[in-house]
Length: 417
Ligand code: LLP
Image 1 (spheres, rainbow, N blue to C red):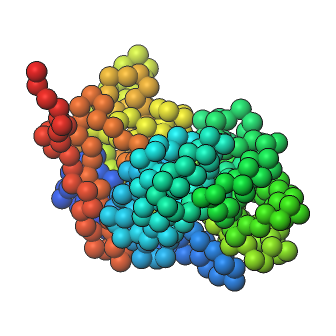
Image 2: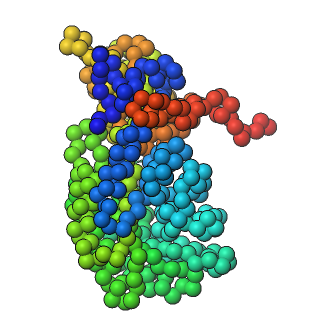
Image 3: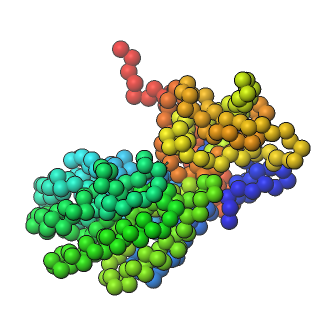
């Protein structure tokens, strides 16, 4: 079911009027639907039910404790990239034995903590990281389970900033070096080789890069087997795209079915995915209020109270995100072509360019598909407190899951000379 629809001239999220949420909690406001998140997560789970699997939700996408707790209860594992994310997962009731730890710069402290709590696996991104993990595991008297994150050198055909599987990207271990690093790992006393991993990029709207990467990874699995290095799991990362505008990405079930078909001869391998965006992007919105409209020199601006500090995707990637008025448009409305801009003192603080809208001061607008990489990338730039977050449960109950920041929050930890 789609999250948003008009009813009696008003935009609803699930069965809740957006205007009611804005009145009660203020704007800007992030809103998520538990039903929608559940439905997206189950799509992965259901399509993999005949295969040993673990869906490790990518925490960076949206790391609110309520989101993590909801997913933990559905049986999710978690893909983390920092100790902060690890602590969030633990705080939210996630099972450490279902955590995989990615990221190119894992510190000594982070590795120690991950070993102490007993995570499932480190996705190792360099040879030096491998040695560091071995050394720390030795000091702690533990064995560290690892997989190597392989950079399969395939073109994910997505925005260059969110493409990670090309030779020139900083991520993972080069395909050419992979065998050699596995051989070295096999000789380390406190390392257990558990798997193999790749993640080639985000917002992928075609199947072919996933299929190509999987072929390359499986070719390595075969070579490892021939050298008596046996793996327990294969982690194919995240990256499945969503529809922001008119993209037609494959569904989670089509993606997993196509990949499972390649894995029929690897029945003993557990399959891991690390989805983020496809779980939560379209389960979330950002509600914003029009503070002013400005019409000058042939330009029409809808100046809203949310900015690049709240939602940086349009400014950072020129990402297109749908903007919907909360009052349903009628055919008699006089429309103009607006740039929807925020309060931040940067010309790039534009949430949406050239949208046909009919807006007036104090109107509410919704930025769609804002559940992924929205709040998690928000900042206090220009000293704006970060927005509140709300979860809709069961289609009609709404709960505050993060308070709006206060001015005290802005300078917490700061000291005056
Ligand atoms: N696994 C790893 C190792 C990752 O680096 C990522 C995302 C994921 C999984 C989840 O990918 P997803 O399923 O969400 O595509 N901020 C950008 C996206 C950056 C993605 C970073 N890595 C955006 O707003 O488009």
